[in-house]
Length: 309
Image: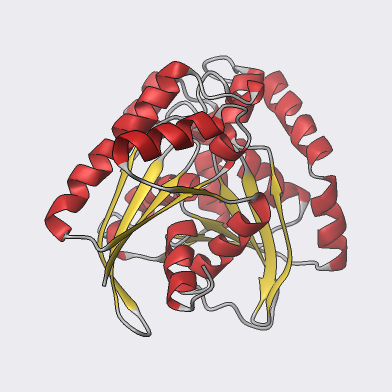
């Protein structure tokens, strides 16, 4: 059976097409479209008309991409932008009426669970605890886990689209603005502080999104022959992470556009993502950082295989 997973994120609609057999699957295609569904309305809990049109265009584009693959089943998973929007149901109904697609809206806890089920497929999680972080546009998911499974998980409404809309930083961002953002993050993460006190860890695994872009940019400098499209996990040196953070927070948007392997759709938000990551590393004394290319859509495939969805 050929199955397509569409992850309707706040910034990006991600597509995964896979050949599913009884006990496994093979990825045939991955693609993405910058829907920016949260732009202009994320903190007002609404999808503005322009964003709704971008979302429809994104889904039409993915449907066109699917055509040659003769997909048997399409599963659409919606996260923060749609679940928190007062008019999210309007978008869901429109997609159903115009495109024939059924959107499954999942809560933050389910999102975190699917992210873990994606990450664990390619990262050898053992006895030692790890902190998994998925940075989204509307929400950020934290999972603390070991080989026994998830020990703690939570979804925080601290996605980069929300932070960008709330703080609207200068170009380049100022040190005072960075401090203001960090103070806000600290206030909002009280549950994480309690969780780390109970389940301490010094290893951070960043899944997908901003981590993919940052790791690709670091690899372009330090491992230029590495084909990142074929790498599912990549260890980010602590010193390289610090250097890249400094480079990002001191850059203008135009300078970032010219950086090697910069995802142009992340130019606006990558600075805030780097601030968020750097804050977590400093605040929780992280000693090791890994990037993981698997996340929600791969977790969705696994749960379908296991009849958990």
